Image (cartoon, rainbow over the protein chains, first blue to last red):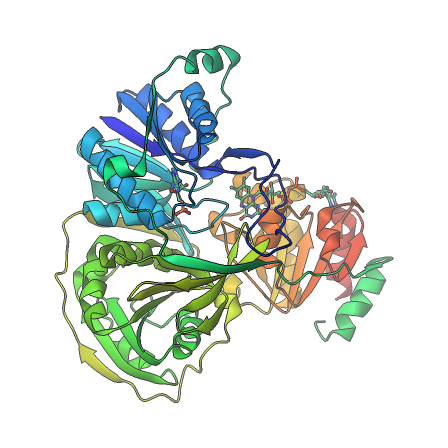
Length: 248
Length: 309
Ligand SMILES: Cc1cc2nc3c(=O)[nH]c(=O)nc-3n(C[C@H](O)[C@H](O)[C@H](O)COP(=O)(O)OP(=O)(O)OC[C@H]3O[C@@H](n4cnc5c(N)ncnc54)[C@H](O)[C@@H]3O)c2cc1C
Ligand SMILES: Nc1ncnc2c1ncn2[C@@H]1O[C@H](COP(=O)(O)O)[C@@H](O)[C@H]1O
């Protein structure tokens, strides 16, 4: 079985995003960029399935600017076998990403596509579900456990009330949640080896996908800021405050 | 505009998250509901009582019992033939289903809306809530998920909706439900609680978390939450996680105990009315958003606080 893993280049999760003064977006100039954390978990899961003999090949895919090659090299250094960059400087919405991925699935015929549940920049949480819809395939979203048995996959999902397990027929789409695994760091030798792995560069037009946005961003603004309040000296003072508020 | 609102339920009763989605939908136009479930007529009857609701579509079929997206999405797409917007609470169920519907309709989804600014214009948080985008849709139909904390709850009673049976294709034959481990708790639900006590990595292990946080929560009649670090370390189950990728809460009072205040955690609780933080590090970022801060060792401060309430 082949596994496709879409990985997005996003602002590093340790960086506090700043809204541009002109209200057109978030300032990404000279900001540290990394692989979306949920996608690292997706890459790790694919590697573990390969190590367990359940998969033969892992293909990492990114839709984004030239620099997204770095993100793909990270996936290759972790253990993906080859990569495809669908290059564009435009911001591509989840629906268009899903359409590009659908076309690649058509060419590659993977048994599984493992995506992150959410990109930490747009916070959409859509692409995996959309891809599953376009392909008419089952979806196991927010996965904390993935088990392949024959031509099915069991996915334990993190849901609001706790955990839920579904059984999907393969081929299927899975999206990762935080507890699925702890991604490995790429070793130096593997980083060197990754430089030689195959990385194809394509364009959205190669897949016949129109990436024109459906949503127009009219403005991006700062959220209401909370200012720091007071510090109390001890527990008695805190109790007094709670009583004042009518909480206790 | 005619909206179709997904009713969140457990085949027995309507979940509160539905009520905020109804409020958001009412800003767009007529509100119709969809109850997809199994043996869910009682839910439909209750949903018909929600103030301001018109038709309640009831799709009662074993295939809809667990709201499997593969099964319910085609049903919704059919109903969208005569609705203009599909409006869903941003719960894990809603987030699972809505994008599948949007893609089948070939429209963009607008996730987690905070406000309705016009017929096709909404605000939504991006970058863990560190920026708010105002977006306008150019699609013929809308698919929207609604952040529960951003909209008041519609009244659960006083309405006079009419229940109408609908049927869909049922089981798509792609997926099946195996089982669930749902937490049973006497405590208030996180997303609707008035007071929340949350614990972080500092709580050491599950016994210490329980011995320290639960008595305080009990005294206050509070729900219990946690940071990702506390969940990852196994102190509490995953459904306790508050944050960018966990639950979004906005109680009257949020008490953060031994939580540093990473942006991903703040994203889930910074709209709380009053934030109280107990942390031994006076420079912890949580104090930048806390209305009341206590710099102290939680292992002495929390038992003392519990004792004095
Ligand atoms: C993709 C992604 C998504 C994430 N989503 C979430 C999310 O939804 N929710 C979330 O919470 N996090 C999330 N995180 C994790 C987040 O970045 C932080 O790692 C996490 O919130 C830290 O948890 P913490 O505050 O409990 O632990 P720490 O950061 O380790 O803080 C522990 C705090 O306890 C204090 N302390 C220690 N001992 C004591 C004592 N005896 N008395 C008093 N105080 C004490 C310390 O001073 C410190 O401030 C996410 C991260 C990523 C990458
Ligand atoms: N531009 C992209 N390139 C590759 N993968 C993407 C891209 N956008 C989204 N994805 C995948 O879809 C997941 C969910 O993203 P989103 O729907 O934008 O929150 C991500 O975690 C990635 O796995």
